[in-house]
Every structure is written in structure tokens, then in C-alpha cells.
Image (cartoon, rainbow, N blue to C red):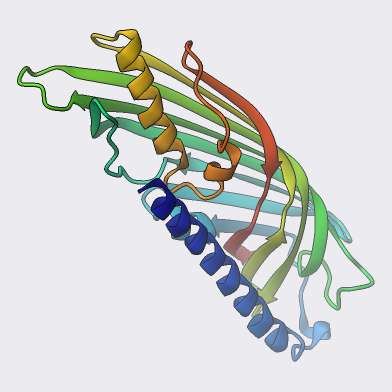
Length: 261
């Protein structure tokens, strides 16, 4: 079951990246036919994150952003919104079975500084090829209820998880401006370094054996249907205090749609 879920997540991420590249190629052909002398360089963009909505669902990933050109070829971009972990999947261990989410919330914040490459771009910023550093913060809070398997008595165990991710890196992308107003922003490559911190608290009749089973279930929750987490936590385990910390290679690929003004 775990390997199948990992394959599904990976295929979905690859599919999104292929769509991104196809859109970039098609839009580049259109952009090359536009007359730069007719472009009016508006300096502000408000945008919506399409890629997160595609991967996690529009009800679980709602991120809006703002970009401001601060000189001829540089800008700063800030994005913020609400996020939540992927939808509940069927997870069970030898003793426990996941019953439901009692809480599933989160926050996303990111900022990047963009350098639009003057020698490569036909148009003024914020239209064209850009590079620059970025920082991204994600925090997820999830409360789950678990049932004992093959137990005649009504006996539930609750877990309260807090998962934070800090990522710093460097990105390469291209932003199109159509009809002076419509902005399509593609972060094509965004390698970085991620700091991952997961903490869980247990509530209910917990002994060491039950805690061990819960930890196995929670590790499945972190890796299933969450692109990339199977790699990050491939050789990691939640310790006896309910803590999992690690560092790993991070990444970033995004599609934004926005309004230029």
C-alpha cells in the first residue's frame, strides 16, 4: 500500500511539471510575436497559486501573492495563505486504524527576490526570465482519531501533530504578461535545502506498544500522498518523545496566474 501511494504522488508531481513545460513552450511562441513597443510596464501583480490547488485540491491550498517591481529589472514577491495536508487515506497498523481527522489546518508563507535578466529579456520586468533566492515556510496541524482493531470496547486514541518546513533555495523561472494585464508565472526550477520538524502528542490510554503502533501510522500519514516526503523520511523514525527532525534537499516548482497593474 505504501509503495503504491508513493508512486501515485510522484506521478502527479511529474504530470504537473510536464504540463508546466508544455504551457511554457506554447506561451513562449505567442510572446515572441508580441511587439515590445506596445507593452506598458505596470509594476504590480496580484496572483493565485494554481500548482498547489492542482496537487492538493483548491479547498486545501489557497495561496495569494503580490509582486512589486522595485527597479528596472528587480522585484520582490510575497505569498501567503492557508494550506492543509492531503485528504484522509485508509491507514492501519497491527493494532490501530485511522478513523478521522478532527483538525487539519495550516499556513504557508514565502518570499523571493527576483532578478530579471536584461540581456535575455525582450520586455521590461516583470515580464521575462528571472532568477533569485527564495524562502518558504509551511506549517501543518493535524489532529487524528484512531480506533483499536478487533476491540469490542469503544476505545479511541487521539494524536495531535505539528509539522513545520523551512526551505531556502534559488529559483529559475519565466513570467508572461498577456494583453498588458494577464500574468502567468512559472517557477521552473527551485532547488533548495529543507528543515523538517514534526512533533506529535498522544491522548488516551497509551502504553509503549500502542505508542509504537501510532508512530508507524503517523509516519505513513507523512509520506502518503505528499509529494517528496517519502524521500525526506525514507530512513527516519519518530522517537519516543514524539519528535522527528531532519534536513534534506528541498525543491520548488510553481504555476501562478495573476493580474498586472
